[in-house]
Image 1 (cartoon, protein in one colour):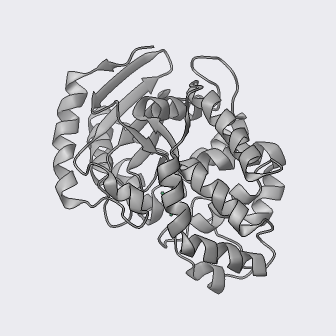
Image 2 (cartoon, rainbow, N blue to C red; image 1 turned 30 degrees about the vertical axis):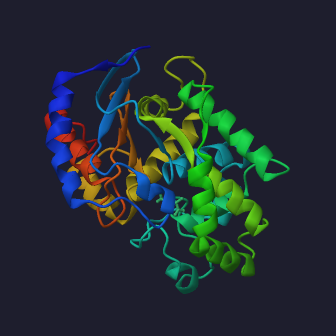
Image 3 (tube, rainbow, N blue to C red; image 1 turned 180 degrees about the vertical axis):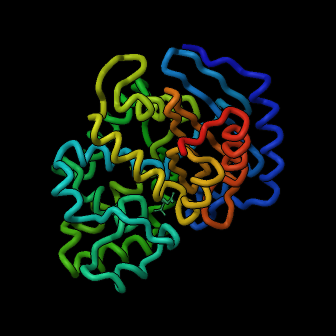
Length: 309
Ligand code: GLU
């Protein structure tokens, strides 16, 4: 299906884009610092096959933390809630996504939720497969079905850049290994995790995946139940409580939809009115959320009354 550029949406993008001046692109993963700070794009994908877009929507970007929702969905379907939640908790932290502090202060030393790095690393360590390559292929297969796009793959450049620089994530894995929360080989899991985070797509792919969640796991194009209803519900709940880092509370008040952001500047939004939203705007605010992306969602939520609350 072709996505049509929409004038009304373009005006909102231009308005929100002003915020990019106040943001900064992530540079702790060196390859992300190469992003074009002022760009902003959005795609809205509705279940009845209407698709609207605005901004530089042909740009691709890596999922980063957005991938955490997708790996969680797959692992939950494979192992069930009981097993997965014996490794990772269900509570927001109020701390930055890469914080290590609660691993030491909370007892038992189990990450508080799967949306922070520590929790996502444990989830990734549970991914099916005999090797990092097999697990990545398995995850990619799932994501290709979600986006109904067999071309989706990961960006080698970004994955390698993160693999070389990701010392805090390695430290968290070793810390959790000490307490038997993390059972895998740290370097293997880091290899898989950095490739997972570097999975690349455009705002249309992301909006379509959002639409799958909006439809409780059923694909709008293929009709396949790609995610079980219960797992889709759990993922959406995590997106509300911890999807926008330690700004999730404020985001729930200002926008009020399940959403997940990544430090690349991607945001996936989900509306109960059967549509998904894919945004890419690499300038970030101090919490790590796309500064113009959040502004755009705020404006859209107000005009179209999107809040679920
Ligand atoms: N790959 C990133 C990291 O682990 C993901 C973080 C994010 O997008 O929040 O630091």
